[in-house]
Each structure stands twice: as C-alpha cells, then as structure tokens.
Length: 465
Image (cartoon, rainbow, N blue to C red):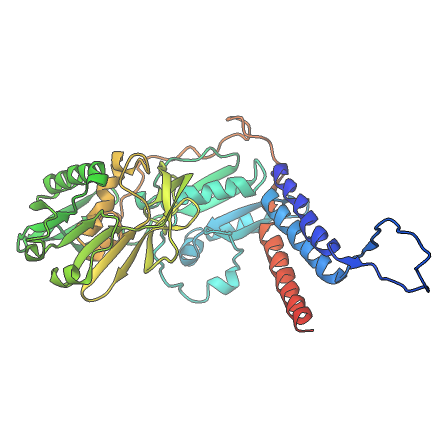
C-alpha cells in the first residue's frame, strides 16, 4: 500500500466548501418611523447552512474511493490450515494424456490433499470428472511459463508444494528464470509426436521447416521472384537522427535477409513515380491524399502521430500477447493521441497503444505514438529494433504480425537441461510468507463507478427540479 495516496482524501474539502457556499441574505424589517433614529452601522446578516446532504455524501464517498485506489489497498490472505496441501499444475488440454500416463502418481497426490489447478493465469481449479470426459481441443499457448511461475511466487506462501506437469519447449521459456520461494517439482511430459514441419515465407523465399527436440532446420523450396523492395524515408531537418537509425537498421536487415533494399529520400517532383513498398513518414504533417493515391496498392506506411508529448518512465512491449521476462525496452517519451485508430500492435508498460495498424485494400497504415530517437526510447540501440521492423518489410507474409517466424507454435525444441526450481524459501533473501496479498483496486473501482452513476442521476434530477 502507498500511504502517500491517502493525501488525496483531502479533496473531500472541495465538495464540502461548495455545499457550504450557500449564503442566505439578511431580511429587512419595517418597525415604524425611522425619522428620529440616527444613522447606524451597516450590518449584514448571513447564515451558512448545508443543503443536498445526499449529494454531498456521495461526492465525498467518490473522492474517498479514488484516494483509496491511489493508495493501492490489498487484503492479506492467509492459507487456511485445512486448505490444500499442495497443487498439481497442468495445462487443461494435456490433463487427459498426463492422467493416463501418471494415474497412480496423481491419485496419490489427490488423496494426500493436493488440488488440480490449470497452469494458466489465475490458476483455476480443475475437476478430473469434468475434464477427462472428452479430449480437450489443442490451444496455441502464447503464455510464458516463467511469467506464470513468477505469478505463483507472488500469490502463494513460501515453501508451498507444487507438482508441475509440463513440457520444456524453448518457445515457452523465454527470459530468465525467476527466483522462487516455492517447493516446486517440474515433471517433464513427453509428447506423442515430437517432430513437426511447416512451410513459411521470408524475404521473398519459401522455406520448409523441420523441428525436433534438439533443433529446427529450414530448407529453401523456391527462390521467389527476388524483387527488391523500395523504401522511402521522408527527409526533414527536424528528424535527421531518426532517419540515421532507420537507414542503419534497414541496411542490416538487407544484409541479413539477402533482400535488396533501395532507400531513397523524399522528393516532391519524383515521389509519385517511385511507387514505394514502404514509406516512413517522419514529418510533422500528414501525407495528403494525392500522394497516397500515387503509391503502390497495398503499400505500407509508418507515420509519426502528432499530439501532446508526455515524459514518462515506462517500457515498450513489441509482443503484447506474449507474456515474458525479456529485458525491457525503455520508453522515455510518448505522444498522447486524441483517438487511436486501428488495432494495437505495440503497447507501453501501462498497456496503452504505442503502434497501431489501420489497414484497407489500398494501404496498411502504421501509426507510431513516439519517435525513433534515443531521447524517446532506447529501442534504436537494441537488437529488437531490427526484429520490430521486419514485419513492415514483409507485411505480405503470414508471420508479419510477430517479430520473426522462428516463434512458431509447432517449434518442438526443448530445454536440454533440468531447471533448478526447488529452492529453499530464504536462500535468495526472499521474505518468508505465510499468505499472499490480494489487490482490492477492482472492488473500489466498482464502488466508485456506482457512486458516480448515482450522483449523476441525483444531480440531474435536482437540476430539473
């Protein structure tokens, strides 16, 4: 909890003063002839009184709830003595296979007081009788196992026994292993089919990928047309540094992929004749419709969006759907847009859109709410910068929505060595916990919204009356 957030409770003085600011003027009484009376002092009669008690109460409650939300309240939950002795963690779609392979082992754990929980956010409880009736459909899991382990470490008391039944696919183990204060045992499951293959396109070529537990290899099926892409960088004196980082990144991508990339500057006289595949519009003004119509059908445009500049300390999530422990890409400044157009591609650390895609048959328009500049973000210095730009160059490929086709759901590579997961509770200086903290922000948000709606209804009725 953040006690400094409670200073916001001082805001209840605002509605109190507004309701008190109801001055009742004094009345003048005639008592007879005043001809013989001398001139007296000028006195005025005023009285202060509260009115609309219910509205005042609702407004004070609203401010109190908002102050509590800023303070970040939580509920200390203790593990009940008669609660579960431990958890059996398993993916729901794998439960049937695992139970048939480890029937005696799982039955023994259940009889000793363990509960079966899904290895997914929130860790909902599973019932064998409900799950083993039908084969669960296979789901493509984009969750990172290390992220789920961190969530378990924050929710459960130190030393809590866990039996995890899961594979060790590298595609689900990105980032670094968190320091755990749990008694966790990872039981590796073996899939029936450990080999897979798929076709993918990259840089104008088609590949056949073959993946197994030890490696994934790619074989070229055809060379494609081999045509070069033309990238146009919009020149501008205010963003010369941005252009420098983009050109360097495009050069590296061309050398890596073997794709011939021609980079030209903006020229009003011949720009409409270039027919670019990709346009970086780094200008402070939007490209007009005449220019857009002159571009190749299906071209990709990335433009700087305009708005209020906000300084902040946050991060950039290039794959918002994939939860992991990768090193954060720092974000120092961003643009606060009035309206976000299209679907979200990148987000900041607060979940706000940082790159959106608005597409139609004629143009794929990426809108960037920051700048490719070290004063705004360190993305331009990171390896992720090249991976983040690849979807723009290969937007026609199916894998263009991620940062590379190597993150395929059929990738069968596994972690070759066992992970050191069973760690003593205080080996790494982790505080011994007997319970966990459950945030109450959602509760107070719901109460604040209900009070706000009721206050608006009463205010409108009072205004009409």
